[in-house]
Image (tube, rainbow, N blue to C red):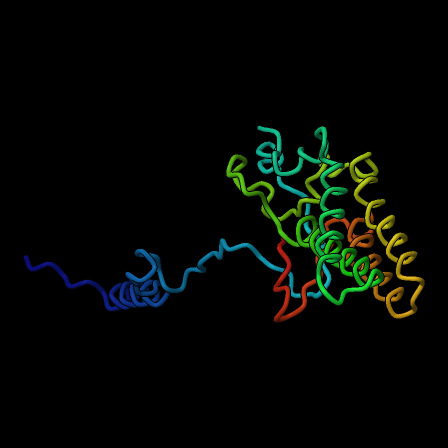
Length: 220
C-alpha cells in the first residue's frame, strides 16, 4: 500500500518555519573568531571622558588590593630622612647656576630660580602619572605622584612642607626682585597656578584636558 504524501498544510508549515528560522540566524563570520555578525561585540577598552574638566574615579577593589601589596616606593621617599633637604639643595644650586650666567641680574636670578623650581616640581608631582616600578599591576597608573603621597591623605607634614616651599621661595624672590611689578606678577602667577593650586584639596584627582596639548583625561 503506497503511503500518502504529507499534507500540503504540514509541508507549508515546515517550509515556512525553516525559512523563518533561517532568516533569524545571521551568517557566521570568521573575522570575529566565529562569532555571528549580528551579535554585539563588547568594547573592553577603557572609557575616557569627553569633557575638558573631569575627575578620576575611585579605584576598584582589585586595584586597592594591588596598592596595598607593597609600599609605593614612588611616593614613600618624601617621608624619609633628608627628603626635605633635597628641595633646599636644589633651590640653592639653581640660584648659583643663574648667578654664574653673564648678564643676569639678582632680581632675574631669583625669578629664574623660582620659575625653574615651580615648573620642575609641577612636572614631577602633577604631570607624570603612574610609577616607574612595575610591582603593583598598574594600580597607580591613573594617579600623579602628589595623589600617591601618604595614600592620598591630606594635610600630612610632607604635603604641608611641599606647599610651603614654593610660597617661601616666592616671597624671597619678590623681596630680592625689589618688588618689580612685572616680576612680581610673573612670580605670583607661576607660584599660585602651578605650585599651589594643584596641591589644594579642591583639585584632588582633577583632570583638565586641553585638546592637542594635554590629551584626554585618564578615567579608571
